[in-house]
Length: 255
Image 1 (cartoon, rainbow, N blue to C red):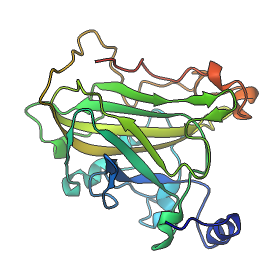
Image 2 (image 1 turned 120 degrees about the horizontal axis):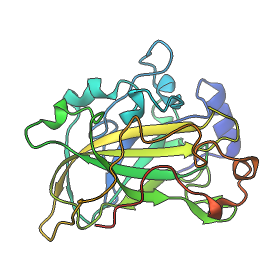
Image 3 (image 1 turned 90 degrees about the vertical axis):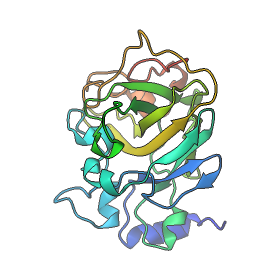
Image 4 (image 1 turned 60 degrees about the horizontal axis):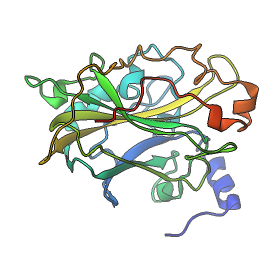
């Protein structure tokens, strides 16, 4: 695949893209599926425009229901398909920074920072298409944080895909898979979150782990503006001291 030079990116940005992005492609064991096939589509910012570039605007409001899966994501649940995923698979999301087709594949990660993934199991008597996740019990399955003291794992423009492992002990069933990647800002209320959710059906032919006693998160509700992992100091904002970073939310579920 041909990737753009810095000049190309600048020219593309000048045609209407922003330095923001979203995650519409779901990936399973290296296979990338069509945009929004398994990921709930989102609305644009402002007046909820349908323009692709407007979908890139980050989430700032930690207490909005849009923080669950993205702006008005539940509205697209009915048309979103559900991916069958074997527990233990490598799954991931690919970034889109609002470039018009066919240039979307040139998209890159504009804001290095932590990336985390959560699962919320759909109640047995409920269809996944009727499950918003707002009242879900979310457990963290991945936290991709610092690689070195000055570099995030999701640390540069060329980091177009973020992969993580769906735990091999994940109990079978239907889930929302919530993915967030964010830039912790040193300025209050300015941390930028990029959130999307995939609909998945976990297949597990082995032993399932227990969630008894796990401190489930709620979205919205799990994070606070005063969390040190969200309102970062100047050192962190300048990509220094990253190994000391403590991510918001509960610990990663160990199965």
